[in-house]
Image 1 (cartoon, rainbow, N blue to C red):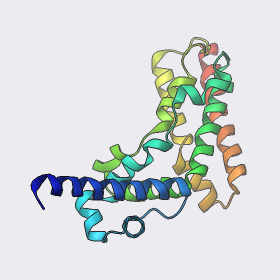
Image 2 (cartoon, rainbow, N blue to C red):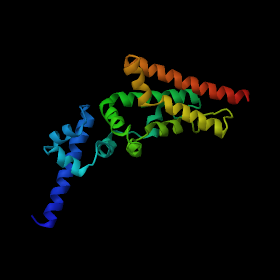
Image 3 (cartoon, helix red, strand yellow):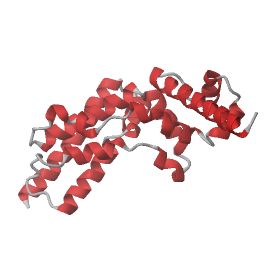
Image 4 (cartoon, one colour):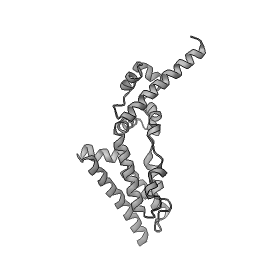
Length: 199
């Protein structure tokens, strides 16, 4: 096989591995390197030659499942109420996590012990939080430091980690866990706005 043929074969193999991972992500099936290799009809060693770890593979495979924060917030785009906006953003994110639970868990597992790899995780919560707390949101005099603190507080609550903590450790059904986190997120928002108004 000449050089061009080898390059084309490598490209086909890489594309097959990525396509297999993307199909598993969309199907909700287990997303592990052995499962991906099996679906792509390659050896696990071959899969690792193209993607050194699961996190790097998942980063590309999940691209088609991500949402635009502006589109997620479209139903409440005209609402000036930050509490309504935060509630909608929280619910959208957590429903997205539940719909893609297998791959979200795989991504967390692949990066949690390797902080240098956390950039592979999409961090959707941050765009949603920013979108929920920008105009037309009426922040009622919330100053920059208080707004930054509220965003940090919400980042803890609006997360797969918080959701899985409630479902896995507390045994809550998913819908109840989502409602609990929406309540927490809106309570944090109300408290921050109340403090700003009082100040």
